Image (cartoon, rainbow, N blue to C red; front, side):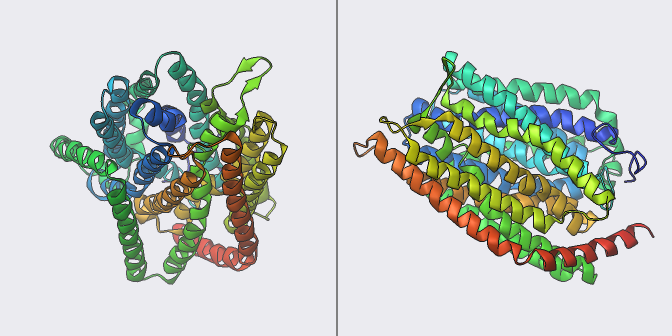
Amino acid sequence: MSTALAHEKHGFWHMPKTFYAVLFIEFWERFAFYGLQSVAVLFFIQKFGLKESQATDLFSSFSALLYALLIIGGYLGDKILGLRRTYLLGIVFLMVGYGSFGVVSDVHFLYWGMGMVLVGNIFFKTNAGNFVSRCFKSTDPRFDSAFTYFYMSINLGSFFSMIIIPFVAVKTSYGFGIGLCGVGMFISLMSYFILRKYFVMSDNETGKNAGNKLILMLVISVIAVALSYGLGLLLSNPALSKKLLFSFAAVVLLVYLVVRFKLNELFEKRGMTIALILLFQSILFWIMYMQMSTSLTLFAVHNVRNEILGFTIPPEVTQSFNPFYIFLLSPILATIYVRSEHKGAPISIPAKFAFGMLVCGFAYLLLAVSCYLSDANATISMLWLFLGYGLYSLGELLISAIGLSMVSKLMPARLGGFAQASWFMASAMGMKFGGMMAGFGGVDDTKITSNLEILHSYQTLFAYIGIGATGFALILFCFVKPLAKAMREVMEHKASVENI
C-alpha cells in the first residue's frame, strides 16, 4: 500500500488515517490487557489461594500462550478471513473474556475467562501490527517511527489502566477491577464500526476479495469458543502447558526454516536468516520483561516502601512506571530515528538491539545494588524502583518497539502475518522462561521467611539477570556491523523490487 502522504512530511501528525484508527483501538485493547496484568498475580494469590510461585507460573504460562499461538491469527488474517474480519473477532472475544472476570466465582470459570482472552488475542494481535505495516512501504523513513508511536499508544493505554485498575481493585475487589477491562474492549468494538472504512481500505488482498464471509466467521467463532475451553483446561495443568508450549515453539521454528528454504529469492532467504538471529536475541529481553508483572511486583509488595509525600501507593501501581517512561521517551526516539535517516546515518536495528540489551542489564544491576541500601525492615525507597524502570523502559523501546518493524522489514511482505507471529513466538518463549525465573525469588509458603531473606532472594535474581543481559549485550556489539551490513543489502534489494 502506498503511503498516504509525501515522504517529506514527518512526525506523528503526518501518518495515514488507518494508522490513527489502529492506534485508538490499540489504546483500549492495551488498557484491558495491562489492567489485568497489573493485578493478576495478586488476584490469583488472594482470591484463589495460589502460592506466589504458582501464581507467577500461571501468569507466565498465560502470557506465553498469548504470544505463542499468534501464528494461527496470522494465518487466518493472511489466508482465510483477511485482516479486518479476524481483527473484529478478536475484539469481540476479548470483550467477553475480560468482562467475565467481573463475575468469576471459582477457579474453573477463571480458566475459561483466560481462555477467551487467549483466543481473542490470537485473532487480534498480529493483525493490528499488520495493519500498521501495511500503511507504509518498508523503505519509508517513517517506518520505525510509526512502530514507535504504535508502541507509545500501547503504553499510554497501559499507563492509565495500571493506575486506575489497581486503585479500583483495592477499593472494591480484584475481580471487579479486571471486569472493567471489558468496558475498554466495548469501546474498541464501537470504535471499530465507526472507523470501519479505514480498515476496509487497508485490508490485504484476502480480505478485499473474500466476499461475504459471515457464515465462515460464525463457524470459526464456534471453534474458537471450544478452543478457549481447551486452553483453560491447559492452564489448569502447568506441567502439560509448559510441554505443549515448548513443543509448539519447536514446530514454529521448523515451519520458519521450511518457509525460508522454499523461498527462491536469495535476499529473501538472507533477510529471514538475519531476522531469526535477532529473534533469538530478543528472548532474553522478554525474560526481563516478564519480571515486571511477577518478581518486580512482588518485590514492591515485600521490599519497597510505598509511601510518597504521605500517600500510600498500591504496589501494583509501580508497574505504571514503565508506560510512563515509554510515553515520555517514545517521541524522542521516534524523532531521533527520522533525523538519523535524513542525515544518511540511520541507527541500525542490530545496534538498537545491542544498546537496548545493555541498558536493560544496567536496570537490573541497579536494582540489585539498591538492595544494599535497605533499611531495618529490609525495604528500599520507591525511587530506586522508579529509576530502574526508567533504564529498563529505554531498553524496551530499543528492542520491543522495533521488533515488529524488524520482522516486517526483513521478511517478505506476503508473509506479513507470519512475520508478526514469529516475533511473538520468541516473546512467548522469553515470557515463559521469565516466569520460571521469577519463581526463584518468590516467598516459599512452606517456610517461615523473614523480609531480609526475601530481599536477598530478589537481589540475587536481579543480579543474575543484570549480569547475564549486560554480558550478552557486549557479545552483541561484536556482531552489530556485519549484521547491519547484511540487513542493509537486503533492504536495498527489497527497495529495488518495490520500485519496479
